[in-house]
Image 1 (cartoon, rainbow, N blue to C red):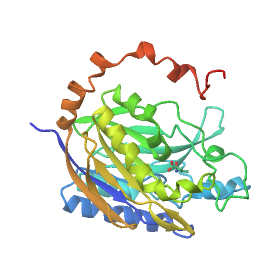
Image 2 (image 1 turned 180 degrees about the vertical axis):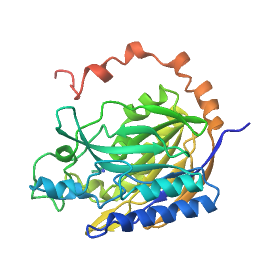
Image 3 (image 1 turned 90 degrees about the vertical axis):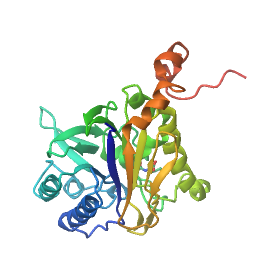
Image 4 (image 1 turned 90 degrees about the horizontal axis):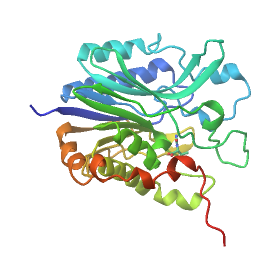
Length: 312
Ligand code: CDV
């Protein structure tokens, strides 16, 4: 029996700061209903999908910052999303800012993604590992990117069995790092779910701006092919609080080919019928890790963090 997962890359247009959680959740529910009508099994929402992309501002007041985080999942605002997905028989993936407490009651802040199965249970929880940007206020920038200040990094790339396959997650900047896909690939991942908020303007390197769309697809297509896995990349797109975010949400096959993609910068679904067994011919042949990898030659990957060129 083929293991087919019909997936919707559920792109969101911009979320402005004044938009309420209830308004946003209504948009997510509208995506769920459209996806259900199109025969989907799984709906993938972007990174930090419940609010505007708040790391673009420097906040001194912690109470103001806390407004962008969820202290429980589901909580009062997100319960209707869980209920409607369960009613429709859909699994979904959601990115949000998580405010947890450790045993000593200290705040732990994560950029989080969850996969919720068709029964409404959280099957996978992932904390973003590669946090881009900076920690201190840098007023020279047109907008801030304070993820290093507002989140702590996660400690790994877990996978979960769900929907008859093996699923993993990564968040935005993670998609640019080959290590992300390989750690997931080494656990047999068959579908990687990736939400993103990517400003087209990169303040430290504006010469890259014109290539932002190319780089987006380049890294996800390479990650899919080199690990024989489906990849679903989903944007929050459009002009949000004056900052232009990249669209291009897409579904990528284990061949590395894009099989569905969004055409707008707004709320839009890109739907694809994904046969998880299509991963096998890549995992069995060219990328049969057990046969062809040479870990004895890769030690530097974990032993060394920054590049160290040889002496002159
Ligand atoms: N949200 C992100 O992680 N954005 C980064 C930007 C800052 C480069 C990205 O990799 O798309």
